[in-house]
Image 1 (cartoon, rainbow, N blue to C red):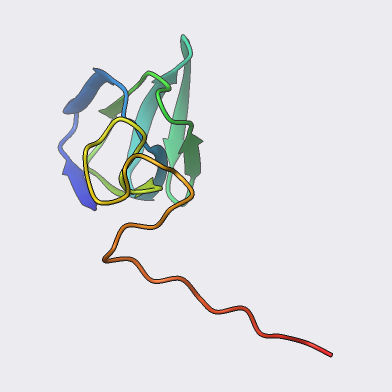
Image 2: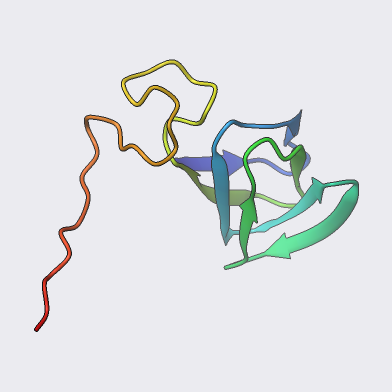
Length: 100
């Protein structure tokens, strides 16, 4: 998902069931996680573990790329049954090539 934030706009304290990978595509944000705050600018990639509480506040006009994986997370009700190792029915998996 692409998320655009105006200066001062925030994604308040929350957590998600999946691993969250956030890349700062443009701008600068303040990220709070595990009680620590850090400033993240262009190109920074942040990985948040499932259930990890966090908040993001834009310091300037910012664009974030958010990826949640595996989808769905453990406490979501769907085709995968909450098993993080089983892919949802609409996912694809690369086939491994046999060698030798």
